[in-house]
Length: 339
Image 1: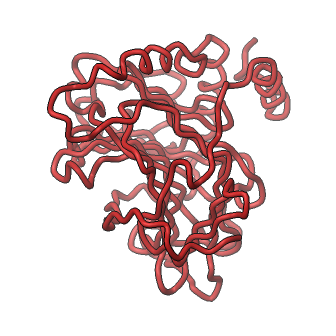
Image 2: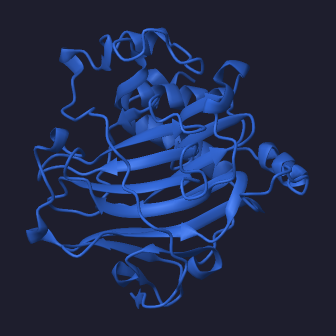
C-alpha cells in the first residue's frame, strides 16, 4: 500500500487498523512506581489512583518530574495532553538525559512541545545529543494534524544500542540508526526520563517575540499511561554491567524496535506532510551532513538550503537555537497535591 497517496482520513484509518491488530505490548506504571519530583513539587498534582500526573506552570514556577532510576536503554512513553488557550513561550518536554551526572559530556533524547499564540497550533521537535555534543544539535520540527490540547496522544522514545525511534501514537516519525561514523554522538551512557513544563519566553515562540502571558495561568500539562521499559543501572558504574544483556536482547526483539516496510511508509508520509525543519537538509549549518543522516529525495525537494520549507510550503514557526532549562534534582515525594 502506498501511504503517501492516501488522504489523511484513510491513512490514519489504515495505520490504526494495522496497530489494532498487533498493538505494542506495554506495561504502564503509576507515578509512585517510577517517578519522583524534579522541581517545584507544589506545582505537581497526582490523581487518587496515581495513574495521572499534571504539571503546572504559573508565575511562581514551572514543574517537573524524573524517573527514580537510570536506564541502560529502554522504551519510554506517556499519553500527553497539552495546555490550551494562549501558550506562547511555553515548553513541555518529555526526554531522557544524564546531565546531572555527566554535566560536560551528557547524552539526551528530546521530545519538546513548543507553545504558540492564540489561534496558532502547538508544534514539537525531536533532538539527540551524545557525549555533550551540544554544538551539533540534531533538531527536527513538526506540525500536528490534531489539537494536542483537546486530545490525549501517546508519545514515545525507543533507545537501543543499535537505533533510536521516536513514535507518535505508535507511528514512527523519526529513526536514527547507529553507525561507526557517529561515534560518541550516539547516546550510550545510562539516562533518566524527565518530564517538565517551563517558561522559555526567550526562544520558544517566534524567536522570543511572543512571551508567556500569565493572565492565562495556570498552564497544565497532563500525563498518563506512563511506561518505563528498560534495565535500571548505576549510572557511575565503572565497568559496564552484564546484568542488562538479557533485557537488551528482549528490548530489541520487541516489534517496536524494528520497523516494517509498512511502518517505513507511514513514517515517510508523516515526514513529508508534517516536518517543517530538518538539520539534515540544513547545509548552511552543516556543510558536511552529520553521518547518521539518510537522504530521501522527496524530503530533500521540500527544503531550502537552510533546512526550512520552501516558501510555497512554509509553516510559520521558529527554528532558533535554544538553551536547555537547568534545574537541581530532588527526589522527595512531599507536598504533591492530589487531583
